Length: 141
Image 1: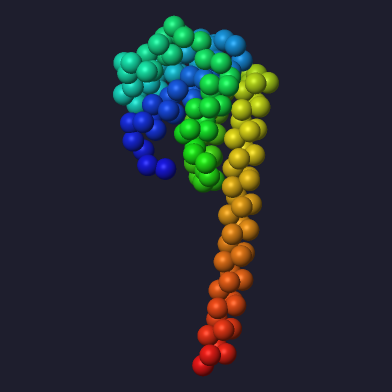
Image 2: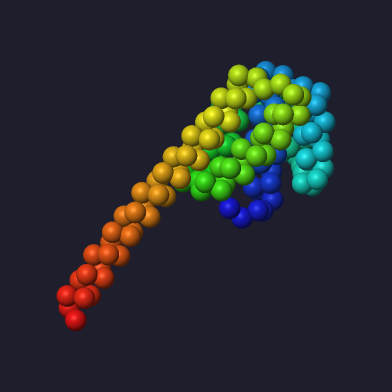
């Protein structure tokens, strides 16, 4: 996944959504979000600012929608793991993992595992095709 301003904004939106997912943003999460938004250069972005300053609450369905948009239709295992890592950094700031936060991480882990098994299946299929092709080439010679 290429890192562009749209992806950075989407990542920050996901982090804000993850902080809201249990219904409230903890002080430690708030501090972490402001720090990340500053580091990523999106703290004053018109799409981010109302979310960052909690002027607009984020519903869980919005957060999951942003995750889907960020990862795309067929996310790579690396993209899933990277997002899990980013969200974990936020979730563990307050030393408390809410059930809703755990569900989000579990959903992402399942996506990652699903992509990993799909990739393994495709690799096995590709190897079988390569073997068949090599046999065909040997027969032709």
